[in-house]
Image 1 (cartoon, rainbow, N blue to C red):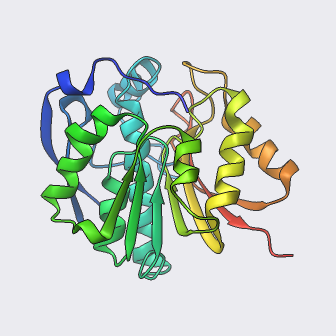
Image 2: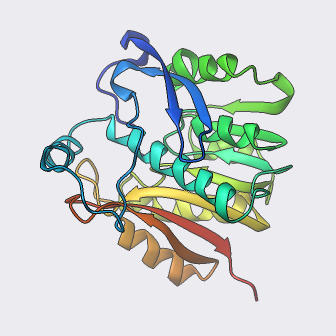
Length: 252
């Protein structure tokens, strides 16, 4: 996975923030000042947005690292929607992994909705120490409820067990070069429980690397391990759309 930092995390001003979801539930978090998430996400089925908003979205995400935070925003909104309208048991009593562009928000939301334990992987130790741990402390998460892992995916694999996680939450998981895609796919196959679910967010392509969502979905199809369902897609006014994709194991 490509790690994008415009400045060292330790040099970025921390901001106390709150993300309010459609259900009315809130996630309190600590983040760099530039990462204060917008309260709404624009979907493919709701294309009426102001010209000013559309222009800002088109011009900003190509070089603005805060765009990864909008992927987190989309994932949290989709998870909230699933709990509100489909199944309030999706994370209840489940073992959850947050991987990709990890911020702690999906993990905190999962715990607030009954998850038994969360493991969070963050390759950037400064991000972990400066913001993620503060987010967990702010939400009074017990030590017994969480585990932090740093380093690369190989280190994460060494720190976990096969088929350990009932739910994998993976914002911007494939913001990477396509040469990394097989390893990214194989880790999901290693970590996801037989009846588990993975939700990942991704833009259809990225400007900072050569990976893209269609190529990753093609790889998934060729491997024959997962069924794919697109849960959400950003507005067509977005030059490069973002999607939330659900993966579940193919039943043989």
